Image (tube, rainbow over all chains, first blue to last red; front, side, top):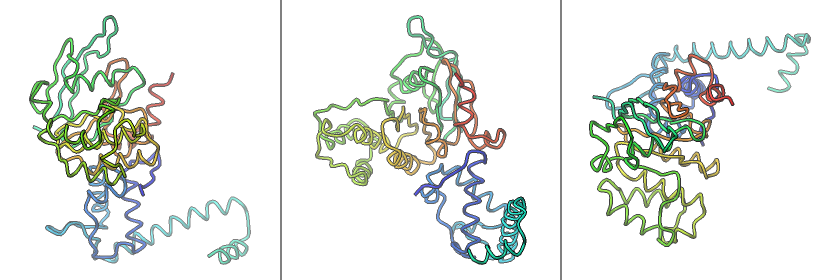
Length: 118
Length: 232
């Protein structure tokens, strides 16, 4: 199954975001090796050069590192993953709050609905 | 030297119509490039000139340092926009033909790909659907270990699911140091597999850029930008 991309952001950023989510959610665990650029490119139906660039982006973000003769591994520094995860959760929460507040509903009611649907 | 294809001042006239007008291009190795333009903009003429099937009236084409000719045909793999195989042939006979013709043809790869596509190599060409014929031709072309692939409308006649399969076939089969040129107007479908794109209009190159650079600078996809540039 190929990945879906939106029109406004560079594709390599969208790939990096998606792989970051896989790491944050634990699909790829700390210290685990990632598929090769080529395999990942085929999986996502994208150009290998674009995938390569996405990997560099993930390295810059500190989420993966290259080990010679092994390939790319997920960082073993759990604080990096934790920080990025917290940041992500915060962003999603702020987005939610922004939208829900425009409806002028009570905090208690919003909590109730949140609990019911969790 | 990292450039694979150089076009210098390429000009081609069809009687009174100018199909290519001083086309200058430089394409690097290891890239997948989209040749994008409206109907009649010169895409096929440019590809045929690079393939050595048409002779330019002026200018020259160099592929890996060689002038277009017999030598370059040995390492350029060309997919024409229409079916050129003999309808009375069976699929495996076309494999034989390619095997005899091209030293870089890898028959095992071709057979494996046809198997993945559920195409029986004992079937006659005329008994295949239009989409299946296109698939067989693409398989033949991509099974060569070429330095330059020229694909003229490779996904024009097939359904969206097959389009994805074909694009995957291209991505997973081209060698990292070879270059692929794909001409198409189905931009949204090919965009994610492209490194670069070229806009061609009235026989002239109006833009050459990387897909992600465009997205970074303009905040829009190549498809959206195409609609803006070529607005009727």
